[in-house]
Length: 92
Image (cartoon, rainbow, N blue to C red; front, side, top):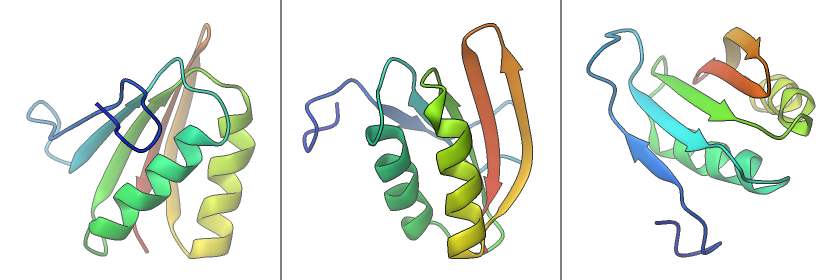
């Protein structure tokens, strides 16, 4: 549970994909929550680690592209399936 925003956010390590170091479930959250949570999680990670983010807010596409550009991270991959958006960001 995210105490800062009082929202259901789960961060867990991914055992099924060794190239992913952490997963952020931001489904159902609205801007700016997914961006702020991803930024804080990336701060706690080591350079080269990958964060997999799952979101549903369409503005996250713009937000995560800008986050990577401004903070020196690499957007490794992104997928859109129906309303579900997935991003893989490597910390720079």
